[in-house]
Image (tube, rainbow, N blue to C red):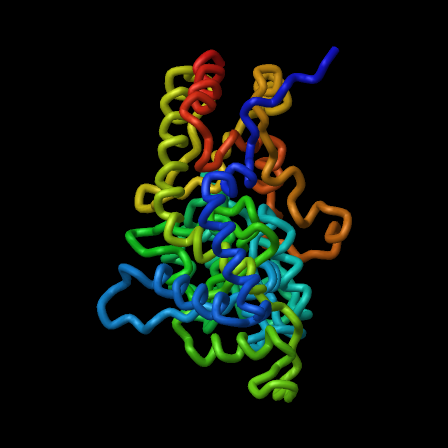
Length: 385
């Protein structure tokens, strides 16, 4: 039997390129013609433009945002931790239900990751457990110096209680916004609430390059300057390393592509919202599966549209038979993967909700270039569930 032809992919970064081909091709040609390919004008301009976009709409009197581009989102986290002086002898709290990159970045600087559980409805960090862990850290671990809440699938974490607890205990907050470019909480953009924020710009992200790229943002100018030096061997003066650094630079071609895409991001997020609303309506009519939960005060940007389904395999097979691809984000929590199993400290809940969720989550097709016909095809199946 021939395999079913997929007519609705779960993600399609090529569609994003084709939709902006003329503008992207022109930007790439501009970068190539410049003769400067690393840390040039394209990168500097993208950093300024991203910082302005990130900082737009904040309260009057807020300090200007700064942005520092780098090679990828994992490095953005690593560089930010290093810029804050966090490394060996420090514990960093995050979640296990995330891309492994979040935990990998913590270990890259020599710090100890402590993994707390998730809220079962939104799949983001359990604020109550985080607050409890900061008040009474597990014995035997180095002092907790930072947390990395992950704004997962396009929706913000429950930040206010976590921010208050971190201020009380002198703990830094690094927001992992790699799946939430443009998401909001109480009218505030994610990435503007903590001490710094990190973004992956991988091709399938809401704001994606056509290769690996990352960026961090902060209103702390001194921190941005330190990270800018660390990303290139610790240089402030060329060839002179004032501190120990690494090589993690955003190249000019990717920066030029990102400059094309950044002004289109809000419209692309709005389209994702339209697709999500159509799925919501279809699921409500079908009645068997609930739409994803939303925080009342959060603006969701739907990096992924994630269902929680006990009979996941059957539903994924049903969709595939109809030519619709789906995916699992993520099939195994970090603490149960072979490289981390049995050696990564967990919070008091033991990541029990995380372990339950990974057996049930699945992602429907979600990207801005989905056509109305493709969306309606998915909705037709959802209504018949």
